[in-house]
Length: 223
Image (tube, rainbow, N blue to C red; front, side, top):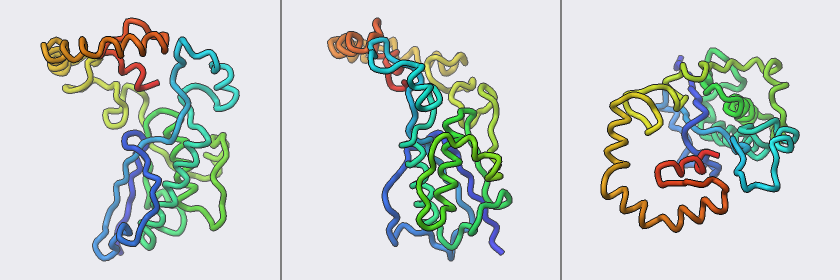
């Protein structure tokens, strides 16, 4: 009997919503093990721009459960991805979910764990089953799905703020920090920043995030 275990890590790679063609189906003659890695579904912003006059934290909390939470679109994305995986690995996946055959690994965030639930519903959906409705937290105990995760700051695999010898400029290890400083203090970087200063000022004026630099503009990328 072929041993099968699929590991789903919901945090790092963009979700693909394309249909699976015949050429993309798994070769059951050679397939022994699958590790599938992807990012969580669409989420609410993790913070609001100072210039945002249309949204409030209270409104987002009432509609979606709070900042940084999975949206209905995100649940649908994961549901459809689960269907895609079922189609691609048809004949290899078990007919029903089994914790002995399928292992789920998530980051600490609620949106990634909820993405697993939506994905699992799509992967093992009955014909005609509709996409899941939020909130999904009520379904955890009923499904019996086992989701493994570590606390924030303790997970070196799927949490990006764990100290590491190499990393982003805001991490503390000297190796990574020194390497980043060499880039940010280089003449080439300064020239690029100077050339884009009008653009940075435009973004600052319209976002309310002043003192934006090419170095800290990542703040806008992770909202």
